Image 1 (cartoon, helix red, strand yellow):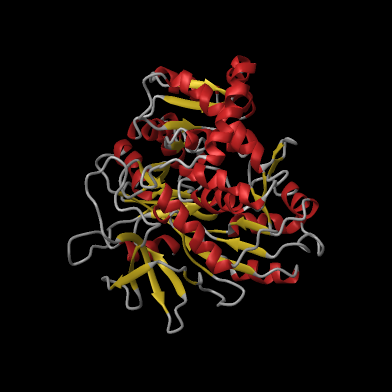
Image 2: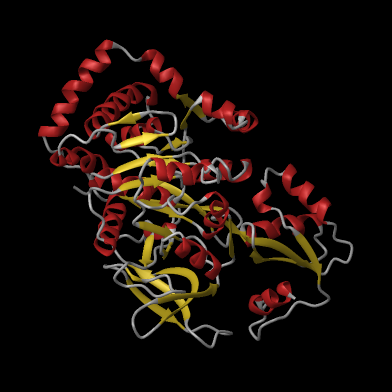
Length: 497
């Protein structure tokens, strides 16, 4: 089944799967329980949504079993779940809500209190968005609701509906070269094909146990870390954050997890808390979002684990390539998964490789709210493919940084020094950082530029620490290409000197 909710109901063919999802709060649910509770919650949502049936529903919750139930309740209603990155700062969050034409956002009072997000919630409410709290849903739940949900459960199990696979299922957000995040609308078909592509490449069995600490708003966390195991009949343990470096290795061992997704930044942080037996059950350790350091590869080999480096973009639902046990080359991000067509266009300033374009049934053809459609998606990454078909990432033409696994738009950061010092030119570059993968450095011709002044200005505008430059470097003249554009490649070299 292609539609996400129909895919969930079809897991009945695997039989009763107890504790198909568990979380760190000791919640668990079987595959049948997940179907029933999603229907139950979905029916209640219908009463609350009123005349909002055709609009996406915002989702702002951590990795827990109730979040999974909420997500599939939205799919049961054949609505799009707009998953908000609650760590991205108020400016970006408000922009995402506006872009997606959202009216309602589902969240939890307990979650808001625990994460100190009350000021953010107040700002959202000022913009006239309506919040639905999980705690309030539980209060209005009645015996009648439960009885009707049982009836609907059997109707959905035994009566196949003709649901539209081309409808939007999920909206995720990624910062582009523009000043604010882009909305990436993924259809049921996009997500289905990417799951099938990954399963064919990695040859994962239904006996695997996934450990997922990448959040729902992370394209890889959602598509491969959550939807793939649940809909394929595998079990998954949800943990709310990848930042608990001491706890996660212990839980991976305790839960006997066999599949784990992470980034180089996080893998380095786990090392002091890993012992030889920690990963004795682990079969697949897949790393993406940033290049894996050779030292990280070496260290994990000492633990008996081979890191399978992969590559993906949100616009591809998200997987594009991955190393496997059968096809592996160190330093590459593996071979393209089945069903991905690609082309490489030569660009000025790069002697080797070129700009990567992709297309396939898992790849979007336009951004949310933008009329312009594209046949080939421009990844913005400069790549090379060797004679054996292995993909190597040489650099990023699109101006992003990936800090602790989060994608940050350099152009967005530049808005702030340009507003603060409008008479000067300011450009943001990313440089390697041992702690978070990359760090931001501001290059400017303002001789009096002050870092603390800039950071205070940005924080007052709702930006979090991830978006703040760590250093300012004054340059007398910016390098220019023959086309008249700034030579970002040379500027990057200056940033490293």
